[in-house]
Length: 429
Image 1 (tube, helix red, strand yellow):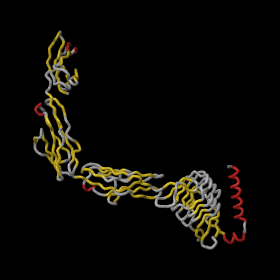
Image 2 (tube, rainbow, N blue to C red; image 1 turned 45 degrees about the vertical axis):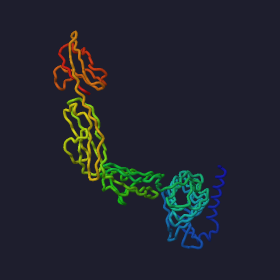
Image 3 (cartoon, rainbow, N blue to C red; image 1 turned 120 degrees about the horizontal axis):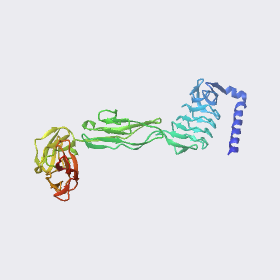
Image 4 (cartoon, one colour; image 1 turned 90 degrees about the horizontal axis):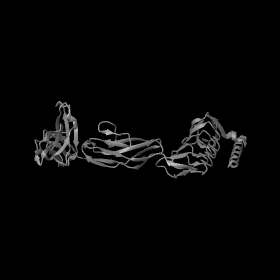
């Protein structure tokens, strides 16, 4: 390998000497310089030139389209050979050929942009540029010598819509630079007041930006819109005003692509977002049943107990509640609500209320100890508490009975044998 590279270097040196010294009178007549470039006037078209060498200060170099009012159409063989001060190169759109070894051994070169006008990359055009990373092609794949990027570790990037590309060019991998949408946004249907999301799947070797549109108008975050510039768009509390076609524009440094349209359909009919929940409480408790709906307002609600209306219909927002205070066992049963709007009506499922009678609690003293007996409904939960002064905030839990298995249930309070005296109460948990 080392001997082969040495031979190649010697060949290049010989070629350079030949270019400098062969037929000096002819070369002088056809050559010129300007802006840090040497050039040769092309035979057959004296208004065009081939760059033959570079003497500029390096860095990120944009090769000019014209030098001394002559159009640059080629980068000649070894024109930038061993220019260790080059960091980046942008080739002008007038160039069609990049010659043999044109940028070989440019040890600091990291990025190259090659325009759509280039149709050929010659032998070892970018040979052994050790830190070359990105080669951006702006047009169709040029004919390329298999050694054009020999011993490089770069990646070639090409644009969507260009042709002739495979997975490799000149010895380096070639990948699509523009974003590629692999999963399109899907049309959505939901009830008024609900939420929807639109999203897509995209691949790209570089960071991407997103802009969602509604009926071809850019969206911004605010109101019921979030994610207008993210990969996922969310619309909350949707209404008929949100019915439209939605798409996303995806862009990166290589270009932009548009997704297909996804439509939003809003159903104005009522649908329950939250149904009444069954509850089990002790007699005397306060109970609230609640229901929430999606759909187009205004709404009218009518609550029922065992299919008989309770109270008068109410109207307003998409949430309705029924509150019962100091419930008794005769209020156990099924509670439901029917909702109406301009697009229809719907009845909720039943919320079952089970009211359990508060358990009688008896007390007797045996051998100086308080013995209590709770007579409660089986399979329910009860709490027994005591207090020494009957203050509402001064009750201490003595016993919790879960899933009562026998009744009456007797137990002893060993702490009640000493002063002060204790008062006891029991209730359903």
